[in-house]
Length: 117
Length: 280
Image (cartoon, rainbow over all chains, first blue to last red):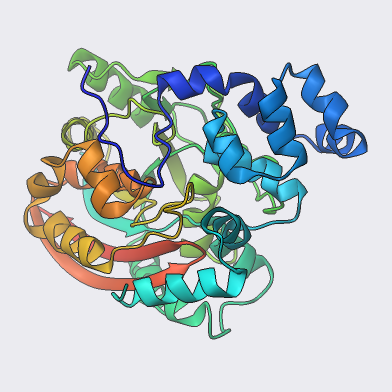
């Protein structure tokens, strides 16, 4: 198998990570359903337990630690569904991950869109 | 015989659908993006397709990690949209098509593309946003859509060269179908973007403009890139260029680029719109 080239600041979601994060992603996937979102918001910890998340995954959910969730095997496509529960959009998530303010993150996107930076 | 009249590339960012739902098209943030679309809508009005073959990627609506096809296509007469979990409004069902769909599925599998063939398939924003942005009043029920989903979510993802080759077989299948149908291809998603990690927010205008040029003149140059190279040059989700390659692969006649628009960013993503007329 030809491994993917490591890219700084990037968590390649491959087979190993998919196995590692399966319970976490399955929990996030369930949040497609309104009744599951309601159950999650009533008791997040219990909901994580129900899906068999490990300690690190549960802690990262409770702490809104997006990088921690990626390290614990989260796929950004499923984490987006978790972010939705927090009323966070992709710029908010980007700001959290890069340690910027949302305004700084948005400004960076504009700069890059213009071919700068 | 069925003929391919055009290929259209378009973004499928959820924020586009949300903007349309909230009448934000004329706001400074969205205007440069939406201003690209009227010529394409007009072309679709003047040259109405009977069928749209729409290449997209599912983002965790129909397919979860438990069973995630590399290449899947629908053969149903209707496709429902559903709650994706974070607030994009669902849209009316999309009309499907069964005869050409099965003809394509049969051709592909006979020619070594072993598709996952779906008689029921919920379609997410990857499919619904392009339909909404092309037919803003959601008046698309007369258009028959064949959705084709390519895995862009979990590695291993199909090589770009494989996606271009898949498109070639789509082209042969469509053009060997013995009904007079006008078929338009949608290559959705892209362009450069990265949602995850400390590298989130990565956009490369240079790479995007290179892709938009090569897509017309030399798609093999894009197809020669590895998935790793695309991630480095276009971001982790830049892999969505695979849908553009599949679309382009199906067009082997004469091409005429009628319209093109590049704008970045919308949300965290660069957007590219191209209307490519196809004839023999």
